Image (cartoon, rainbow, N blue to C red):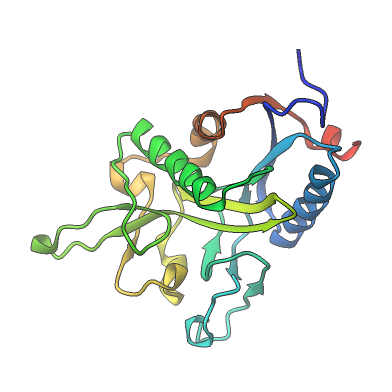
Length: 230
């Protein structure tokens, strides 16, 4: 039976928002869901989507990290630094109640590591860096390559923002920036690492399953229209 909103601490509502979603639109919806979750009117909820191309700057973004060519950047209320979102990249915004931020970040990274493994890609954490990485080989001149990133805001015990996992996106979008403020590293994707095209649509059900497992929740599908009726 589908759980009712706000009365099942073990449930995770999965809301698929589709593709080419404007960043401001998803950000506004996050804030709305966050307020409802804080008030106990919604259960834990994850928004799953692909954004229209956009650069966003977290609170730790330094002036020199912004694109020098005047490319527009949206300043947002999450932690972290400058990054890109867009087609071919899976974005998940879990809006959930937590008590331990560090443990929660680890769960999101574990989610991405597990998803990568499901597609035959070895990803891991790197000390001193956020996100998950495919390891380089100095002997071959191959740098470490970022596969996914985490950026969060926690207010009144409930999270916003989340993680982004590169599936089939064009890496040239990252050429104008140092992703997450980390210079001298590469950016990769599931497609680039495996040599076959792995699109977001293929990854979504696996990512939803792994996210629910990492959070210890039971997922259920919720249409956006039904969410907005709450």
